[in-house]
Each structure stands twice: as C-alpha cells, then as structure tokens.
Length: 329
Image 1 (cartoon, rainbow, N blue to C red):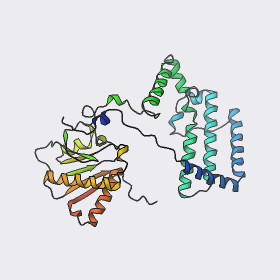
Image 2 (cartoon, rainbow, N blue to C red):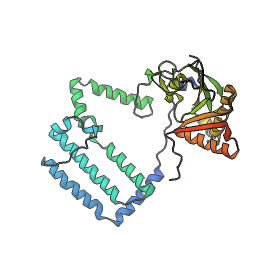
Image 3 (spheres, rainbow, N blue to C red):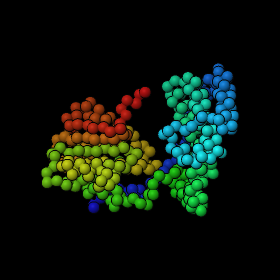
Image 4 (cartoon, rainbow, N blue to C red):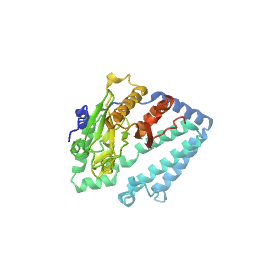
C-alpha cells in the first residue's frame, strides 16, 4: 500500500502530548460562588452532614438499605456485598455521595455555574470511590490472591509506564499493537494533495464504475483520519469505495509550537484548497462533503463563507456527524 503519510513518526509512534494547566481562575471563581451561597444558607451543610451521620450509624449496625444503582458496574462484584467491611465501605461512600450531590442541587445555581458545580462534585466524588484503590477493592484483592500477587505487579508496571511514557495519563490500549497501513488504515489509497495543514488522501476505486461526483470527508482536527478506516470490517472508507464512491479524506497535520499562529481561518483556507484539488483531480464541478465533530464545525463555517462569496454551487451536499453548530448556549 502506497500511503505517503506526512510525519510518519507521529502517526505510528508515540503521539505528542501536551499538559494543559488547570483553569484555576475558573475554579476559584466557582468556589467563591459556592461559598457565597453557603453563607446565605449555613444550615444546609450541617443538615446534610447530620443526615449522613445518621445513615452511617445504620451502616455500622448493619441495618442500612443503601445499595449501588443497578447499572453501577464499580460495585458489581459479589465481594462488595458478601464481606461486611467491604459492604460498609461501599455504603458509606454511596451515602456520602448522595448528600454531596444533594448539597450541590440545593445551592440553586444557574447556567454555567450549575453545570460546573455538578461536574466538579462528580469528579471529586468519583475520584474518592473505594473501587479506585486496590486494597479497598475486594475484586482486586481476590484477583491478587488467585494470581499470587502478579496482578498487583502488572498494575504497578502499568502505572510506571503511564507516568514515564504517557504523561501520567491512563493508557487505554496497547499502542505497540497498531501500525498504520498494517492493521489500521488498510484501505488502499495515496496522498494526492498536500498543504501546510493537511494531506488529502484519495482511496483507490474498488468497482468497475464510480459515481461522478466525489465525496470529501473532513475528520476532526483532534483525531486521525483513520478513525473512519480502523479495519476492513470496521471502515467507512472501505465501505464507500466498495459501493462505487470516489472518496477523498483529509488527514490533519499535528501542529507543533511553531504553528501557534494558525487560526480558524487557516483551517478554513486549507479545506478550501483541498476542495479545489478534489474537483481538479476528478473533473467534477461540485462535490459532496461529509464532516465530523470539529471538522464539521470548520466545514460549516467554510461553506458559510462560500455562500457569502457566491461559491456554494461547488458543493452539492453536506452531511454532518456529531457536530455541534449552536455553541452560543
């Protein structure tokens, strides 16, 4: 396969990661809002603390009815209900969660403050779940006993690997198992156009005849083109060429610090140039667009500019997936 993907080291190797600073100013502002509400209602936290203490006494006596929600897979292992200590730990955590969420709800915040407070509460509460710690999780300890401690060793090795090789983030997959062109992005094609921000891949036709009007796909800038070409059995690109479509796919460049001056206009210009290249290659006076997520947002803005410049006749259709256009709320 003749993939000519720019910056192959970034495609097939460890992707660059950038640690972003937490929005401290926003958190401080939200903390001020919450404290202001609590000062107006000083009895609220006391009331919920008393409710938690009352439930905790029932937990200690083994008379609490607190239980995990049916869909909460964190506590699906039988060890959470079979063992008295583990059950009490789970119930204590769930009771505390209930009161914490109730406090946030009774603050009667509105709009952005309400959603931010709920998100922060959820993040803190879930971070404190006893399922996150190996020695308070009966399922983890059971597996450790059965493996002679090997599961704990492997977990510690994964932890060290994430700290050293993944910027402290939890690895979701084994990256060494995937290689562009071998077991991911396997649909035959080649780069037919390139500018500073993107490459344009044309997939090889798989039918005797193809539709005259080409389809140009714009994936998100924060993802790889092969999100739509994961495997022959799980590939939109492969399915489309098998149905006779002329498929062109944008592959966005990974920006580096020297590209800090790129703007939304830069991405729109890049899409327009790839659009022009697609028409020139196929000889078609117009094309169909398909775009996803941030790529859909960028493409929509580009086509709005087309309309203002009386050039929308070069676009026959636009199909959007998971694209939020109304971002004013």
